[in-house]
Image 1 (cartoon, helix red, strand yellow):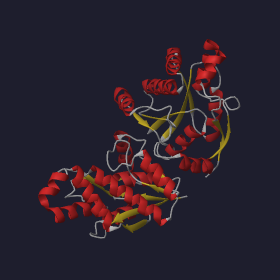
Image 2: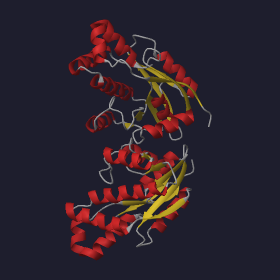
Image 3: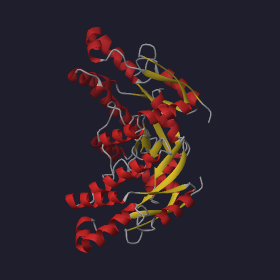
Image 4: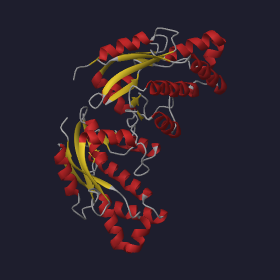
Length: 200
Length: 200
């Protein structure tokens, strides 16, 4: 059974892929608006941990929709969840895998689909949405990451996210200015990048 | 890393164990009030799918508490969740594993711990509670079960649950009579028992 895992090159989506590996044929999928080449970092991380990689282009209209949502609420959570939902839909529409997964955790607030959104996604596209980390708390995830992955962590300046989040941040800064950007995005937001996988 | 998985001999807790197996040393734990020997079915299923098995005795006061809860609400859901929570606590108090898991699903209504109960369980006992099926919907679980397990299904008369639920049902019938029992428990409640595991 094939599963496509939404992939950012970070520790959570990498661990999600590792947890699925014994049971599925895993392909990592990184989404991009095509504005920057940060996805190359995800491609490299995918190679390091030994999974096939695919790049998927997102409709630029999703970026506009996302920025509108962030401005409306004054913080990024709803916009991040919206673009994540659209990314899942975009991958579902490809029709390449019946199972589509991501690295969202039990304790995450964003990105997060509601149960209604999950059921709608599954029913409309005939897919199964899987969240391998949904049943794990922070400490259990840290235990598994320590056992399987070597990572580097830092704020978004030092370790930019390899998926569309960096593009959203840049677009917002360019379109609306530094001041609006700083008001909406919290100054410290730790990201992780996977360097390699420990052989088990 | 050792994980103890609350085990009923059914398809969900069996699949939970299988999903954890590549990453943990799995031990299956079946809880009993010591009133019946239905746990022997769980022991047999555990043997069939190739995991070590442990029997853990529950305090009979939990049974009283559970029946009170069921009578109070007029349906079994809250009582089932309560005894499940107490079973997790009982296993946590043993202190034999830092990770404790069960086979509860994303779409289950009972047994189900609230986020507050989960955090309280983890913090009070210094354990990590894992729900391997929490990120899977019904169809994805069916796909995995079809691939890994041969099961038999039927109502609770034909395929009694191998954990404490059968003991709760019997106790309620004995203590409060057939009429009260039938009012509280739905007449059809499909159970599964694992017969064997397909070699992968």
